[in-house]
Image 1 (tube, rainbow, N blue to C red):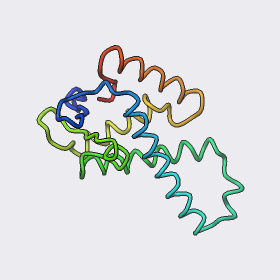
Image 2: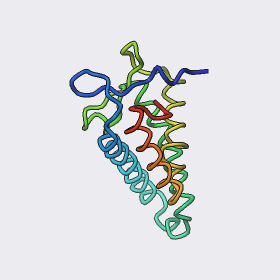
Image 3: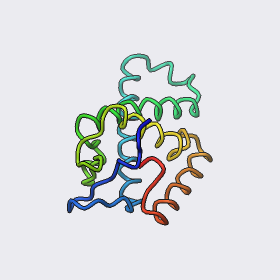
Image 4: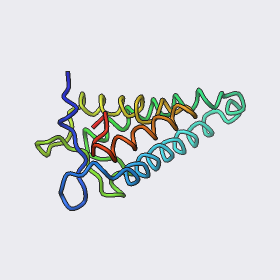
Length: 144
């Protein structure tokens, strides 16, 4: 079992700060939308006609699920993602090291489940509100 309490967000000044909900939101949004655009471009290049027959809810779930593997790899290798890097966020353990693959994957999985409600409309809204509330109240989320 991985101790998720060993994961923290590090702010630009080097201090540990997990209570920046809007910065975290915009970094995640940038990452997911950029990933979605990249997948969309590849999809169009491979089979543009099939786009008319795709269920949007299923596509949203699959894209956000796929992203958790990409995010996990980025956190393991770089300690950040493109959106987090642009907003000067790194994800390190309390020893100041990059996450192990298991920690990064578990964190990404919990963000997908608890933080973004699987990427589905109303559950996503509820998950975002609950995550924001806890982050503001306690300074940490359930996936940190």
